[in-house]
Image (cartoon, rainbow, N blue to C red; front, side):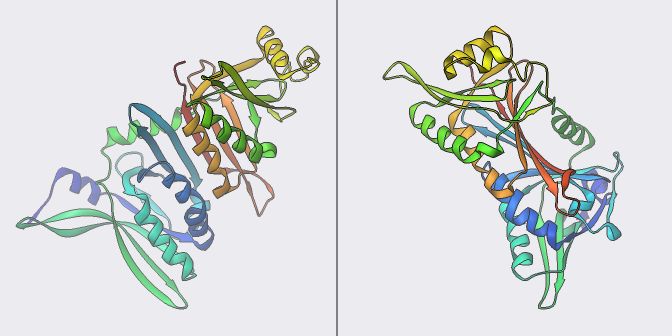
Length: 332
């Protein structure tokens, strides 16, 4: 017979169904999935009545990797007419899934120009040893002029309520930094700078100044000197006192400007892994954010990169779509 476990019973009480639109299929397949795949093979999905989060915490050998969190409003992801998300725990459903399997399904739908892709949580009876067992899947079915496709994507068993709460805590731990600088106008140059610094050292020192200057530096061990680059006049968010501090801006060199900013407490500095920083900066090419805000938290525990997007229909910054990447500080 079929063995029913408490987890299977909880899963049976969950209902999740939504139709991905052609634009969200493209957004995921060309943008956020390739981004997440740069950091690992599996991610968590948290689906709720209002939004969907894709979350990944990458761990490298002995070092905490970046925390990547993508937030997509329900209306960005799904056709609003057929969306259902119900569970016994705050109508939230979370599970782990393999990124490359999801990417394969979406790629198939995208290349075949599917009008929409229905995605729903389902239990399937699967042979396990000498008995049948209920296992959770995401079932995708798509229709288009030249296709009729149904695919099952195996997922982990849906998270228990305490695991859902832990994931929500991770998502909510987005403590905002005192100020951010927008790197988009100098993005290509910053990527090139960090690639150069990475050859010299496995650690990069990032210094952000409230006047709108960003410094990236590395210590060159064999010559016992520091090499770096400064980017000036970047947009500061929120604009604050000190943003136009002339004492800092009138100094004659990057080193003097940084020293003066330290003296006047207008800066934040943090050391991060150069390999991780290079990887995080490189993924901007997949989703092309309108702004890429870079900040350092109050206690200098992490570098926070916030990818901000524009709603193409309204031509305004949207709160329905964002990505946050946190890089933990490295002990110097």
